[in-house]
Length: 131
Image 1 (cartoon, rainbow, N blue to C red):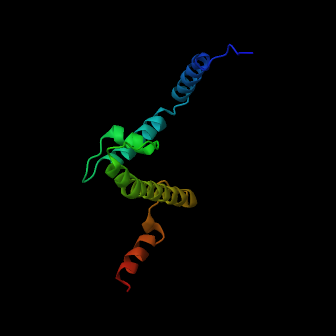
Image 2: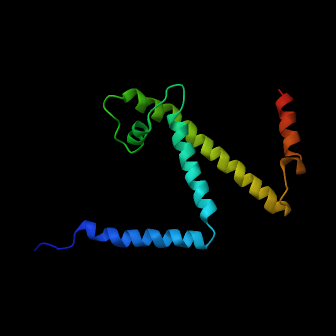
Image 3: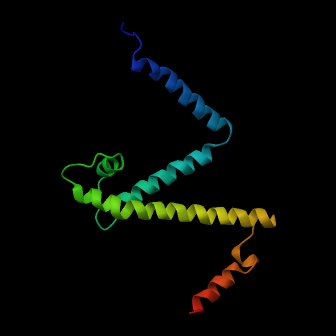
């Protein structure tokens, strides 16, 4: 009992689904968000690849998907121990700062709200001198 259904038969509906999704993104004005997401992905990959030791992009990809190249174990160590944790921390920090800024703007109903509005920046400056 062999099935006549092959995996490659599903590629056409998946292509149609992605094209409909892309058309929906364009129609609903989500294209700037898509560009921002692609730009973020590009900068994350470049932040992992570029440093004191440049690591080629194919090697970065192999390490990230779990197939470290046999000849470049030093690159895998650099990526997994140094660059990937720093990049993840930078992404989390940026998300936290963006969330706190949005909370300020929502709380005060002011699109120009900044940390000086309630003295957070001044308190942080004072904390710098307090030891």
